[in-house]
Length: 146
Image 1 (cartoon, helix red, strand yellow):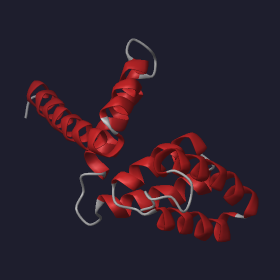
Image 2: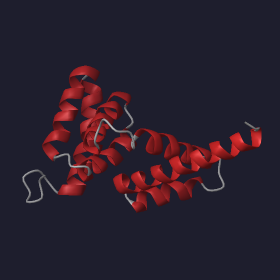
Image 3: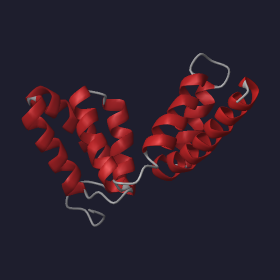
Image 4: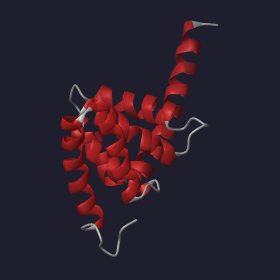
């Protein structure tokens, strides 16, 4: 196989993964979030990372069979809590709601993660989760609790 054919085949595969990833990323995070993330990267050092994340994380991982989006969202919450990535945690709380997680399940994910990562990490995560849930659903006990 020639190098030119191989490069063309690899580029076609990367394009297909990027396109699939972009579709899933938009469905999970919303057009406004994805458009803003991509726009921030245009013409910067971060542009390549946005393409990589879209192609690899969203195109290769989120499109795999074996776990539904709801399960992937629940896993993301635990991972982001453990790593202390609070800005991304807020994004994935919103995504989890969109993927069918309830307010109670998200809260339980924080409680469960706290048992493994410790109280300071859990309390810090709950602040982010609480703010996000209130912004998305209103205060606990409101009509829109899911």
